[in-house]
Length: 317
Image (cartoon, rainbow, N blue to C red; front, top):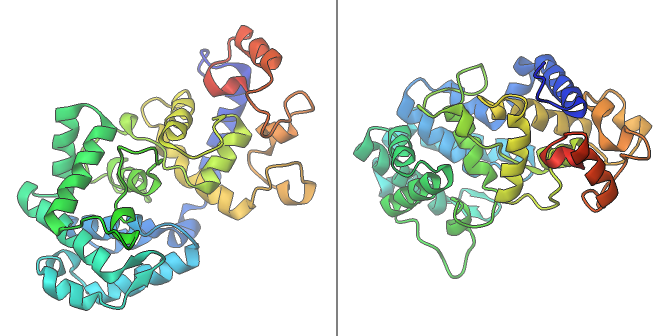
């Protein structure tokens, strides 16, 4: 165990490692949108499908899976080839809809992605180049999205949210969960979940923070921020990097699925918390002195004590 970690951090790391090691990947993978990407062999098809799957991955999981299957059925066995003809692609996707997105939004998204593939060889090659040039993940991600938007004519609409929302703007305050999810899928080493198709250092990746990960991060003291913004994402990733600086996002899949399975109540609830892999280090189960919710970060005396013990960052909450 790393001696640089505080006692609290060591306990949290042990719990997270146990959750990750105990995650039944084979059973959970079919429930995750990344599962569909594994069906394809060609890298261009995989990139197109991964982009589509990540961009529509918000809302009810059952609905996401149903809409994704409908989309892939329309695209056929070679999605990248379908995206070579934008006009016919729009016809194929006419009538498709998921939340604020309609078929034309996805058609322009995929046509733009295919345009980038043709210019750079792959979506990954484009992102890798932008990352080398900017040495900044956020800036590279924003420019990469700009290229896709320009290639597909995916402009912003004054009457609908879909065109703007389908590909988030990394320059804003949003945590960009869906874009960071795509980067995790493509950038982390292949491990049966993530695919390792892009040459991106896993150390620079950020955790894609959805409602489940954010709730668990608050309860574990990985962040004090109540809103899942870009800053929240960075804070959670910094905390996880204390456990593995080379690959902090490796905990994401197991944390997300733990959150979905456990239906965390964010309070002491003997029935709902039973069997939770992180109950032993949850702030709600640490005794009266650590059982905090919205007041976390406001108790200056306790925070000062934590700093004097040598605990760092959000673990002072």
